[in-house]
Length: 157
Image (cartoon, rainbow, N blue to C red; front, side, top):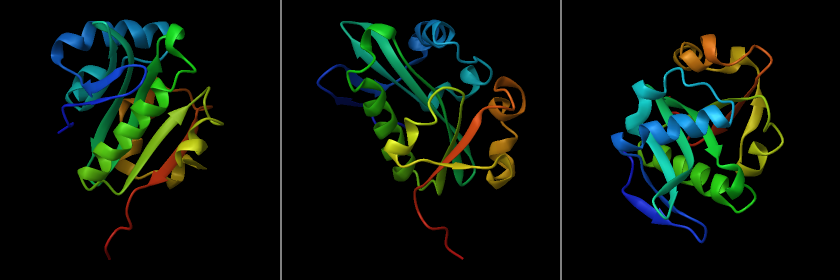
């Protein structure tokens, strides 16, 4: 489960509650990100909140030993203030705390941003089958989206 909350200079990062879903869906729509699978994985979302408003969101979609980092969005007024980095850093920490082997993501706009957070490009064939089976991979994101990975721990073998 996601840890309760952390503070950043710009906004409070906390676990999302069910009441946050409509605001997160509006934020994702405004950011031109898909809603497919959001409701089903919303228990593993975090949000950035300022003065009662949701100004950012990110989610984990757990796929056995790996996870999909999805729906990373920041309100336009809050971009460039470290909110996105704080959300992704928190999501990485939450995934590590759960013993996740690696995080994967798809992006059509941020392939140059995510390497600053430890992600590197991979082919879709390099992504585990259970992650490739998510709605994000199968229907929500175009085939032109760049797949990326961040290893969190070395699998035991």
